[in-house]
Image 1 (tube, protein in one colour):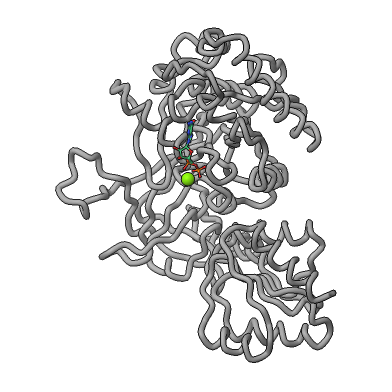
Image 2 (spheres, rainbow, N blue to C red; image 1 turned 45 degrees about the vertical axis):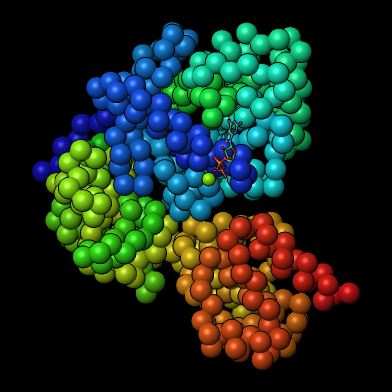
Length: 457
Ligand code: GDP
Ligand code: MG
């Protein structure tokens, strides 16, 4: 029988930003700080994510907490371990994202860069609110570091000339945001976080400013996401973040559950390369606590059920066909199988397509990256004939050759993070069809555009 009590789940947090802005360092710092506190209820590792319970946040934020007047109702944060566009793209759901909040990391001295703009585009498109971590303040000449202290404390202790330098960098970043149509300000000067982007100056390396970041995140979640975070103990919903081969288990999925509950033995529907997959949960695995591991292979422990928000390893038959970025629904009543299969199918068909138009062929590794790439190409007015998941195959060349007869400038293949099968490579070389390969979206699109432009001249 279904219980129907509602509760507030943890918000799902993702980290985005330009390469080298400090995403990994920041994630490590957030987790490390929590672990180092060694207090009851500190961080717990999930699969693909880390859970920071409110207790851990309290010890990170300290006195700063008095600044949020409301009572804290979120249990903590579920922070996705992999930063960057790709993980974010796969946390998709129709018309939006299952990520509740994003941290956009910007290098204080460099401001917004190419992938920052790209990230802002995706966040906007998927309507995900974000906070800006203005990172590496410790690199500002003359900065004195106060490890793990709140930014507002550390800032007050800096020389006026150093404070001034920081303010200059911040106003440049604020201007950059303004030119994109955002209002933005240093977080402690923001009154309405729904109207003004909050910039939190910090150092992922020394930890100063990290408490402020956590506080702003908590405040945002608490005040503006409450409705969205309400969930029921009912059938689970999630998304496949990643697929992974595990010795002895076959293909397994990292499932990010954003609503309800999933149990061992549950019937689930998810998306596959050849249509919806209906399968039964064989087991649900979570990381084994370090002190219980007997060998490096002894990584997982079985759990009977998992409640949102959570990251869990799903073991089930048929996952070798599954697509990362596909939704997953728990079926509580067999009569729902058809309904959910249709939902999954429609969702995948909404991304993959084949049209009889003169345009490029796009192949990507996951549903999320394909969707993001289609978005970029559309923005750049590049027509698409085929958008599909999987390696570049001979079939794709057939499409490109048809396009070549009508307009050779679009007879090209854009491959994002997928293999190019040997026979496809051969056929492409023989027919002079370029295959652009990449794992950074804007570069892939730029490479194509450069070629397109050169051909035209
Ligand atoms: P990512 O590519 O965004 O994940 O960036 P990383 O976290 O790998 O950081 C890139 C480089 O910047 C590394 O050498 C980090 O040690 C350095 N870095 C990151 N954050 C900071 C910071 O706050 N201060 C300083 N001085 N260096 C940092
Ligand atoms: Mg990194």
